[in-house]
Length: 356
Image (cartoon, rainbow, N blue to C red; front, side, top):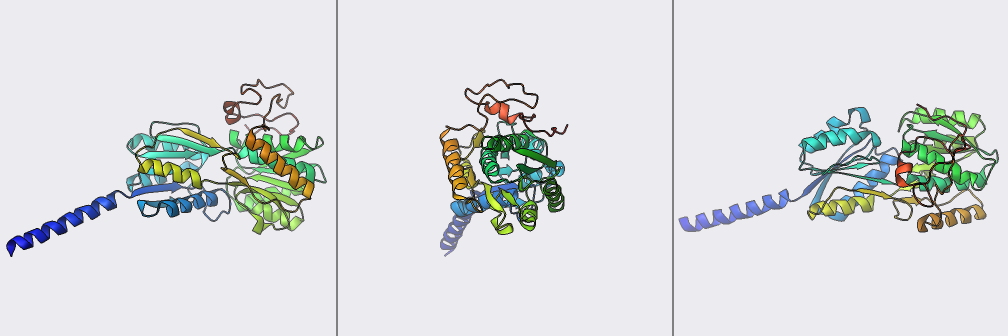
């Protein structure tokens, strides 16, 4: 009897060890968002990517997110996830770059992925979308739809990603409307509905009949709706906030990337690197075209096809800066990725000054 008891105990112990081993194999994946998941813009779309990841990989992973994390106080949040056993951590805002690198140096056995940044390490990869491609499409639409030849642009911070988006939008608009003018208001925030609404009102008061934005709330769309004007959604489809205002939205699609990178981590094949995908890679998807004539829709669809195939480069050379000086073309037929990623100047025709 004693032998049977010992055997049963051994079996139970083995089962317990197997269960513990199975539990230990579950990969903990963390996400850090600069805004709330209910912003219906940028952070919301990253959250949709997390949910798609959880659904795709099921009980192989466990995911966690932290929202509303200020860029200047993000290191604590990133380290919180590291200390809590997360082996793969996605940090999703430009200002998280240096904090991510600092935490990564403390935890060399963990893997980190930083969105929209440009600094990497052995355990830090970077990824982003070519947002400027979608903004070029927006510009083409705006150039055809505007009646005042004036569009307004609400910008977050004067970093290359935002400046490049403004330039691409303007070049797209100018390609179909040589009389186009763009007015820019810097909100100095990624997400602040109050500031964004005030910026939208100021631009509408200056004669803009179309609003574009590189901030994350739906407030500009709502202001355009109230004023009977048009607008473009940012990062997510914002049609429900402006059913009569939205022309389209540049939506971000992170699901495929999150699933692929997490699967690599599960398989022990994760490596550092850089991914920059655009319309062709379906990291940028344009929302349905609404509130425009059929010929404008057809032109927008043609523009998407040409950008996807590489036949149309938003920054096709020659490109001139504000002073009219031709910028050296280092990318063959267009500006190189390095030039776009370091863009701190406006193209010729934009009358505003880049904030210093």
